[in-house]
Amino acid sequence: MQDLISQDECCVQYNIESSFIQALGEYGLLEITTVAETTYVHAEQLHELEKFIRLHYDLNINMEGIDAIAHLLSKVQNLQQKNNYLRRRLLVLGDDEDIV
Image 1 (cartoon, rainbow, N blue to C red):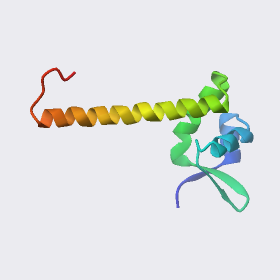
Image 2 (cartoon, rainbow, N blue to C red):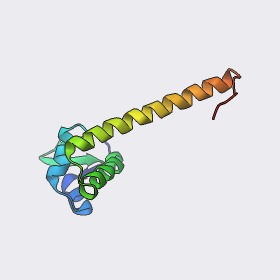
Image 3 (cartoon, rainbow, N blue to C red):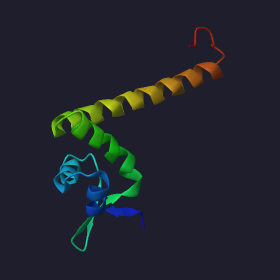
């Protein structure tokens, strides 16, 4: 079974409201799981949760803004991966001129 951390524990640890975690789940930004009426956050998503906490609580960005930022960051990451792939292909093909 995956490592799960209770929503209540996250709220205490990060000093946030449970409604914030619920909203992240509703927007599809965070995968939450409910087992026996207890809501859990997947441990591998804590880094994402911390990023969303900073955006919301430190920068006062609302949920719609966080959703847009997450979408754009995902696109940037995908473009960077594609760029790296294409650079490697160019190197394999021997066309290493002007690859920066």
